[in-house]
Image 1: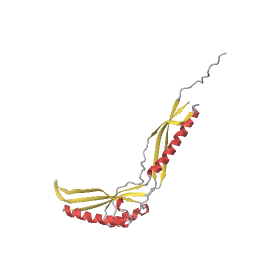
Image 2: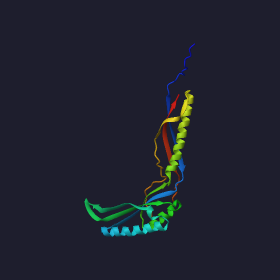
Image 3: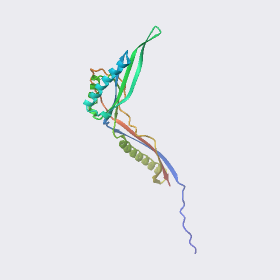
Length: 217
């Protein structure tokens, strides 16, 4: 009597592709403020000199409020000729000089005071306020892990409903998102020197989105 080897019948493997998405909300710990100084004069040199004087005063006010020198950067410096148009005629009236500082404020609770003091020192344009988190990558990685768990649970549910066994090791993972936290406020506006600036940071949303492909058998 001959014995024959036993071969288990094999079913062709299938796949399940699912997506996972998770959003975390975190408190910002820094603010990035664009503070501008705009000066005008008929003479370019005078307009530039005024701007430099006021800019020095604004920078000193920032330092006095605890902002580090390395956290104050000139983001733009522009000179614009100015004209009046009357009866179809163009008349040159002088120059406008604009200098904008990008300021990173790490003591976020003092943002309002820092802006007010900068205005009192000569700033006349607050172009942008963004509230950010100093370590967004760590938060994004947490959201990414939770997005994967969501995708895995979806795959388990679908494999069970379709009478398949799920291979827990994914065949592929595709990251659809990037660690780009959304600022709570991004507004352009002018401030008068006698206003008190009340700034509320709110929260930042960090979202991770992935697509995962699992094998089934």
